Image (cartoon, rainbow, N blue to C red):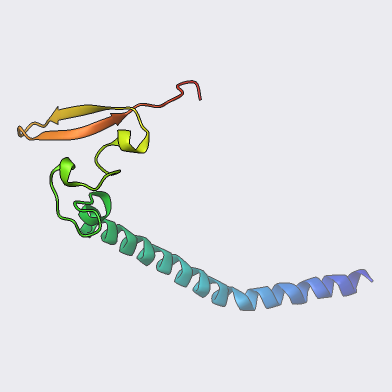
Length: 108
């Protein structure tokens, strides 16, 4: 009957109301854990950015000259890429060397 369904719905709502504090507690733990993880990842990238982005040596090799790199790692042409040498002068008069790698097929 309708009253039985109404009573069943009432019981389900009561159970949900009793579980809400636990669900909010779990949600709070997940949220705080996510924030802490985000902060940890951000700090990791901040403090280790030089080791992650710029790799000064290849397999332990400490070299500042392109010619000293092993064959296949001296320039993009050794890997089959067309490129141009680019030199950029910064505001503090440091010249940065870079490679401009051209896309093979400009349509795709």
